[in-house]
Length: 469
Image (cartoon, rainbow, N blue to C red; front, side, top):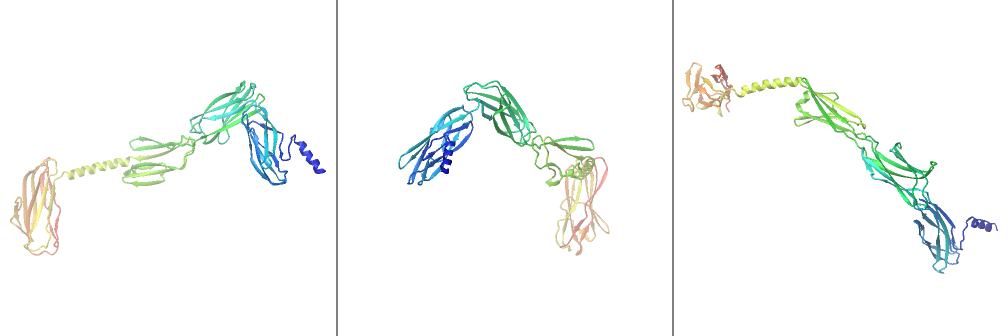
């Protein structure tokens, strides 16, 4: 008896009518933008197993969709099962009331049980139907535009409303806000409100939220919507170099400023200079590393990071004092080299290879060349042959004057002048008087001449050495 009373209380708590096979609520209330779920009970009161098909009609009522968890169920005798029913209500539709029917049919007896359910949809006077952001990814100093659509789905014009729009950065700080007073929106119409926002130069990177809030005259929220856009992280690390030149030094200043909105990652600033500049390099901050590449030296400074809007400076000097001294030295050496290159030459040599024995004839050559740019005059070449050697009477080139002494023989050639670039080769032959075991050194040849300034000058060849093999 008590169980029967409890069962009757449950039935009375639902103003519903049900058969022995179908139990469902008689009324469902939903709100716009809501997804609601309720259950129906299907019971097999028969003494045999049966298959039941389940359906709902209509499945769409003014945009509201009604769907079932299962459209077919198999039950044993006296078995029951709960089936979920899903109701999906669009965001912004008018208020209305209607009915839909759930049917359960036996596959064996074809018996049909139906239940009508009253659907009550509660709408909003005005709702935000769209919040459109024209760009999803932006860089600093770009502009984003967003459009808010307000729809009045009812049959009456709306009361005065206020639309508040907030833009929050990744740290939820409000960086910009807008407020629009809306006098009214006509029935079944949509009003669009457009705003734009320029991203600041040093705006924090990350996800930004656009929040639209619709309130009534009492500042009570009616509806809200949000959308996001992203500000990309950017940074700059382009160096700007300037040079200040003075008599004593050259000062180079390198500035790097981060014009982006994000700290820079670690990077190197490099400066390439001629390798010789190492001796004059005077940095304010010592480079972190140095590298020699060919004829250049490369200095590297490690920059850990530069915060947005911040700047660092690297300065070094090239001392010109030592450079001036080197320039003077180079000029002097150049002058000496010039004088050396454009000075007459005297070369004494022999190509003989062999033993230094009697009757072995050795050819000695003396080459003279006027490498100066002017003629030289009164040219005399003198060479000496020690008495340990005897001279052949045969000469391949100009025959010299021969003057004999007790210690040896002097050979003398004389020329009135030699033009610029003119060259003469003088040769003579000698033979050892006896076998020479050690090294034979022959004295230097001597040339005297008068240069363009009428100054008499003397030029000596190198000592020539003959070594028997």
